Image (cartoon, rainbow over all chains, first blue to last red; front, side, top):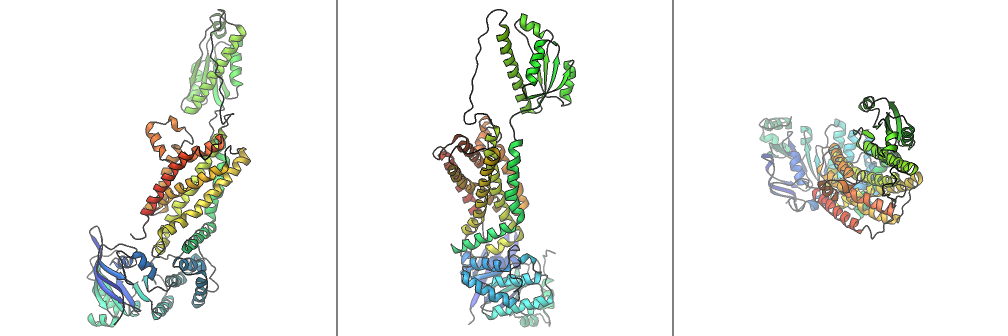
Length: 247
Length: 371
């Protein structure tokens, strides 16, 4: 029996008469890498923001890490990490200072923060940069750092919103090594992406079209379902039916 | 409690890393404080005067020299006719025309009565008003002098009322004594309110607030950590201001400085709370800046800094009751000039406390981690 860490039932977010997220139901299991795919404007970010407690759902049900997204957002926040689409560490603080700040916010002690920062910086190979302002780092390093910060306090679940946007293939590969590493340590990874090769790295994926989940399963299951041998084709078949797009 | 220390540390690091903020916080107010009291001046000097003397007598010459010798007027033209003098007013070369009729001296001595004509360019209202009242005063002094000198031709001097006035709390009517505390109040408000508003909105703009909102951080921890550094900075600015008031203007407080610090401590809670409230409504620094400007202008103009609140229309008086800066300006003047004690300013404390609770309460309610 797999342990469920995220469970939604007909979860919706309506802005006026626009159904940004239109009754999605799915489950995510502990320790898996769950890919949350869809075209631009399909509602991925809105759905993710509801699960993180950043946005109030309009209707439906959802439990994240055992807490209700309607009533217990602050308890959810203790148990998750989040990396937004927009880079959101402090550019005017150094790497160490950012780690110190976020560690402190999650209630880690200064000693704990110091030790963990040390090993993290060694792991990322940033020994020479640790006292540089984050704003001066190249984008790829910033992304890796932002991910490391989002799991610095060892959350149960980490939400990644298009974490590899605008990053070169080599760095993307390194980034996914970090994701695998986190998943091995038992952190559930919930990730949105546009890259279909990244979809292949996920244990299971969902495909969102116009606010609804149109397909859900492992990459091989989906490929079989849509009679094709690559994820790109699965995406095209689904996205072609989409009526809305922001591009 | 530990969390908040991490947050405060972050805010101070960011403030001290941003050189522009430091310059804006300390250097700009210092320069303003050194320049503005010299410029913001109620005294009218250098009123441009045109004289039309049809009489050309000893008495008319004496009157003119009294006027020009007063130090308030600058004789710019000596015209043949009123029409010619009026042209000077039209071209803005002259502010006041004094016309002395033909037979001035003769009529004064023989008839015991004469009329002078004064025309004022009222485009610059305060200059015109003060200029003409100075002029009238000089003329009436002169009038008294000649009554005493010549006696009255009819033999009895009309009874006169002389008013001896003394200016309490600012004996020499030194306008700087009046302005410096007011301008200091203004600067402290600007530093506190603007920076708080802009600082929080900046986090919204660059997106870091999202990373904060997704943490289990307590709303009041975040807000206190945002307010505290600017509270400290504004207090430092205030201290620098008091020091400069003494050093540059020779102004020391009549009252206890600690009374002022106590009031400032509470007042800043209002100014910062206002900035915080504005920040919860704005998405960009531009919006926040414009809204802050709008309100600051109201605070300044309806705060009694430049014009007395007592002479405002009823609606403006009502608005000024909700203007926190009004209370700071009043308290600064009361304590610095009059030496008021804590007891004297208790009503101000009560009102400012009320405003502070209202503004901060609203801001905390309006700041949401989840939208």
